[in-house]
Length: 532
Image (cartoon, rainbow, N blue to C red; front, side, top):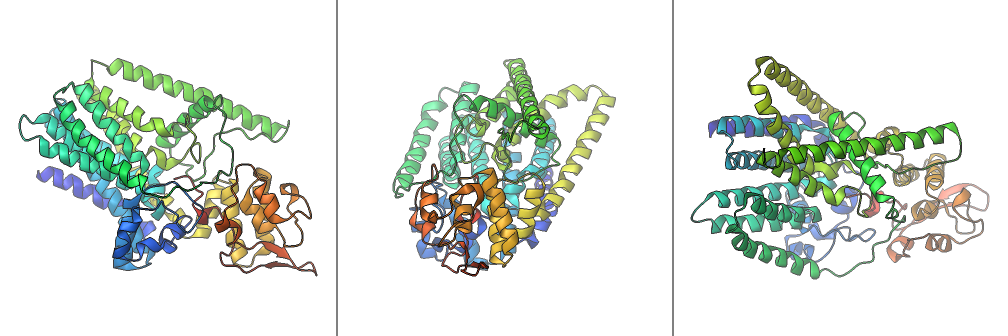
């Protein structure tokens, strides 16, 4: 017990050290909509109302049902009002708690599969340490709006832990079934992806062939899922605008292969990390640069197929021979499936989407490697040295990455410089420049955004003038802004957008001015249009 407490304390200390720069950061991107502009976090009396609305009540409508995420903001607001450091502290604390929950679950699962406790502690500790310090989780830990993933993982790992405890008991397992179902419900109420833990729980029972547990746990789980459905059903429906068409079905397997290769690269060597990743082709003519970029994307597709083949080969080889590894690889695949690229989401890839799958994968790798090196002293020494250097590198990289979230300008400029120069990111930086009176810079950024996506309504709104337009290829001169925006494919004419935001306009003498309005400038970042 003392050894486990020391490991847990070490996890917490190292996580806080690695993410320490985030404690000096302010609110960026969606933080403003979820914290500064959400009226439902301002009072304890509004907690029930928080379960009756999706997130982004004062922004572009979303269908994100995450009442527990909103509840944590209520607690932060009650204790600290709008002090950013306190919100970031809570984020780091939640990630630390998720790391501890993962360690305890991993240790219990390995013991359930018959792995010696001493070996199990080492395996679980190494996997938990690597997972908790990995910089790919920066969007979860250093970003106040990203805490939903940590919340869902915390309750999800706790639910699986309670289930494993129940499967090991001959009597009195009902209390663990109930606790497990409650934790899984909390995971789903934290983020929609938390529902995957319910599926993992059923898969665990099937893999372990504990048939008696299936109906018993099933009753508790059905009650939890019915509660979730009943709560979500009370939320008024909203029409979520789609700013870009979904990829065709025939293209999705290609996107999925590229996403897998992209994820593999940033997991092994997380050097180039940023929001707004994209793996689709964006040709701009028959020139060497465009053809080279397209060729690299095709090579990435091939790399993704190879990675998938290796994972399938590994899974097949562990079937029957190594049950714990097989179970962990199945968990990895199932938890990764919703974000693999086959399904239409608000992006085709995002670093924080592999928050949970990476935990299971790292644990599977640790279980696989440990028995191989135990009989070879030289291999053991080399493996420990390499693992130590890699984990130290992860911690240092996390510390550096946490500094990217210092303030909105730092976040936008570093993201764009790192390759995340999407239309949404350019518009967000343009809106910031516009709010500070840098009109030339703002117009340049909006034009760049329209060059990437000519149908971006936020760029059109900011560039449109009341008597005319000067938006390059994004519209027609003399066309009214509301007509151009409303004609953009997939865009719904929302009064909250059209009525709140004032454009970058031109006075009769030709001088650009910022028209003052209730909402300031139109920005997708301030309106819940980022991949969550």
